Image (cartoon, rainbow, N blue to C red; front, side, top):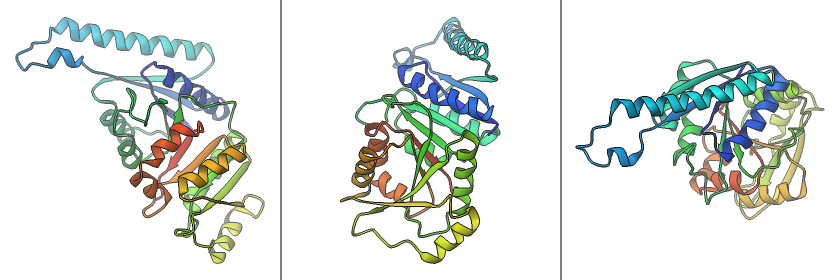
Length: 274
C-alpha cells in the first residue's frame, strides 16, 4: 500500500478515522493524502440576487488551506509522509473525481454516531461513494474502539470465486500483520446455501489451507447474524465486496450497511470485485 486518501473535515469523527489512517500508514509506510473540501455557506447564496464578495471566497479558501496545512505539519512531525488537496465543492463528487484521476490504494472516511451515516463528511451519498469509486473504502465509526487490526472477518456467501478480492485482503493482512482472517457465512435460512466444496478446494489451492478459516453464524437476517457474531467474537475489521447480488447489495437495499457501520463500532472495509 503506497497511498491512503483521508477526507477530513477536522471533526471528532475525522479524528477517530485518523487513528486508523495513522495505524495503517505506520504498518505499510504509505503516504497519507489529506483531502479537504469547502463550500460557501448556504445562507450566502439562499437568494439568487446575492453577490458573494471575492474577499469572502478568499477567506474561506485560506481558512481551509490553513487547517489542512496545520494537520499536515502535525503528521509530518510524527514522521508521516503527507500530501494535501484542498478543493471547493461537495465532498462526494470531489472524492469520486480525485480517486478516479489519481493513483491511490485506500480511501478512509470517518462516520458519525447519528441515526445513519449521513453527516458533514460524506453527506447523504455514502452508498454512492462506496459503489462508484474504484478503490477500497474503509468506514470508521466515530465510536469505534480502535486498538489496532489483528482479527478480520470477511463476510460473503462464498458462492462465487472471490479469489481476486481475497488476494487483496490477504495482501493487506500480511502487510499490517493481521494474520487472523475468518471467512464468515451467515445462515439466514432463506438465503443460506452451503459453501461450494469445489470453490473451497480452489481457495485452499490459491492461498493454502492455513489461511482459509471458515465460520458460520445464524441470524434472522444478515445484519442480525453479523451483530451476534461481533458480540461474541473480538473483531477489529469487517470486510465486504461489491460484486452484484451479494450480501452488500441486500444490506444496502435494507439500509443496514449504514446501520451496521454505525452500531457495531467496528470499521468496515469494502473492496470492489473486478
